[in-house]
Length: 534
Image (cartoon, rainbow, N blue to C red; front, side, top):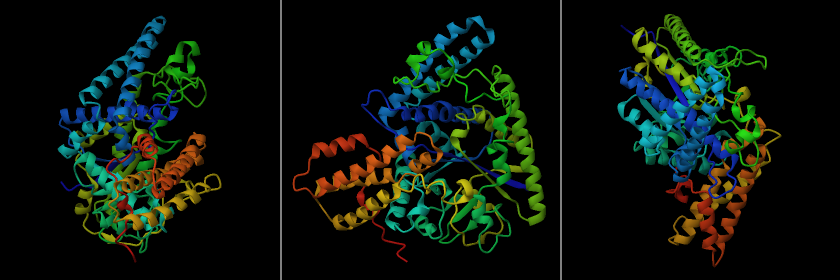
């Protein structure tokens, strides 16, 4: 039968480039990657494997940002994760012994121990390459992977600097191909940041589609007949897909969203904070800062501080019920939209990947149940990839969209405000200087100058990351974000001094290269923008 709706589920996997080899104690922020691998990426791989084993026909798309890919492929960070996992197994063994007084706690400690041992085996079987784990599903056609701006740069604030817009997109595409072996057909514009004209840069790199927040398409000109339930062409043959508010709120909403169910695991209770320091000190930060270990014994329970024990079977039951509710909601929504519009709707549900597993521990199980229910329990809606969707809809409109993001209030307030505006004078000074230097040296055969310019490009790209402004706005790890801005700015100017020196200090240049080795195949000429000059 004809489908009444098509469902796009997209997970945006991103972390800022955090790599600090040789420091003792280790940087606290390096735990971000460890937690994401442990709680999101490996669980997703295992969930995809289970679906394939059970012959479930599923389609999902994911972003893997170039900065994240660079970290996932880094030997130092891979070893870092393995050490982290071995410490967790050691701690879990201690917990199994400590909790013998309480049968349920003992059950949970054994539960975690078994999980961590399984994850270690998976990681080693993949030769420590998370990318290889996902590549299996790219090759099978279940997973479509797309790229992002190289360092998650928020492009609307760089509209005046076409060399940066060009470089961020071009390098993002190049890194994607290096890791996946295929050209990306889509891109996640960091923070869903769109401005009119960016589609020309995308088309130049062969990018066919991107995602935006709801208001970008809902407020476009002309107002689209199918609202946000069909992709729109925004120029140069590039398509935009908009987030569906209803399906997003069922997961995202802090009030009504599924992850707030009382049966799910409580994120904010962890033995890293709950147990005596002398017992836990070897498993938190050496400076004495308590951190999450990933071992959590409580469920959400309610809104008070009182928390009861986590019961995995209760949480699994909740996942099944929520997956059923999500599916029924999409069927009802699709039937209504098709009846009203006369065209099968495309429902786009994008989420941060780290929501599934890291923030919402049961998130991967919810997705597993959802895909199974879509496959086995009905035939009205179907999961689909964005490129497939473009070919499925009967009529596609061309529209003009204005500036938009998926940040608070929908524009740039998160990334440009009183608390972080000072960073942009540094970014723009370096950006403008880089563009001039690229054209000055574009024909140089001097390998030393090329080497220095390549590292300057790395420092500039890292400086342009949207993460630093976001962290400052959120008020978490602000000192770290401020330091990163200052460090990359200072290194950029230090490298410039070496560039124009008659006898550059190559030992010093090598130290900087070792400190920030992102994008080893970068070429500074990637900043040369030969198109979009109108």
